[in-house]
Image (cartoon, rainbow, N blue to C red):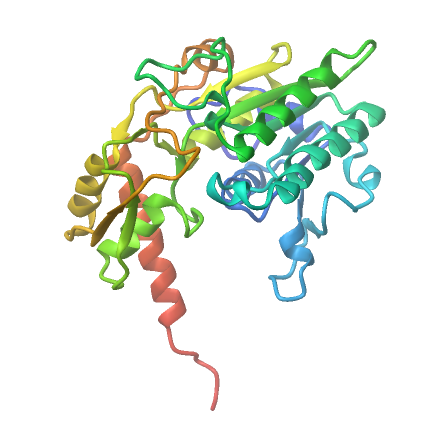
Length: 334
């Protein structure tokens, strides 16, 4: 089919294959899910988004292409029947809260995933692309983390993400299974619409003079592989139709940056250094993450193109636009 060009780095033919049955995106109102659903709609791929935030009375209404509800209780068969690809991005995020709310993480990250995989296998859905996390590796030693490294999750959250991965591989390897599963281990994703509790969102708001201290866990020497959301979307799209067996793939940059170096970049972008308070680190927080992206490059054709500086500029502009929109006076009669 003809239509808007896919972004650089996404293999040709992706749109045509997904258009055959359309796609389902779980967690479509979330940070990465909303970007993915937006990209799919822009490239004329039929999308059905599912998110429980659309099912809450106090939350926003579901869009015309969306369904509100909890994946733990929704009737999944009508939603998944005939799908060419299911992007499973729904889940409960956060390392620190997982220590106190493990039953919620077990439900949302493991039991829901099993329920979705069971339904996909029964209906003959050919491909599930699922969001995993670099946290399954545990703490790094400064060398690139490749997919052959033995996982060593250091938090309840990471344990549930690894369990979800393993469930995916189990369903894909089951005898006579037609389902293939690609689990993407995302490394510290940032960009417009990032969750407000995440470091970069908090740092940008602090630097913009909103008055809140920016609490940094540790002394700022911890290093993260920060990956821009548009690059993550490209990798996720590529995973939808790649002729690969089921498996796990890193989605990172192969570069990492210390928290203190990040704060200096935030100051460069905003013209003001955040107001920082250093505190004790929490259990489960990695001191170093660094992706080895070679497998994703070789097999998925994934190559990130957004520098950290450019990504910060984009996120800062998005925050400014959002604040301006919120502050704009109503034009209604009064």
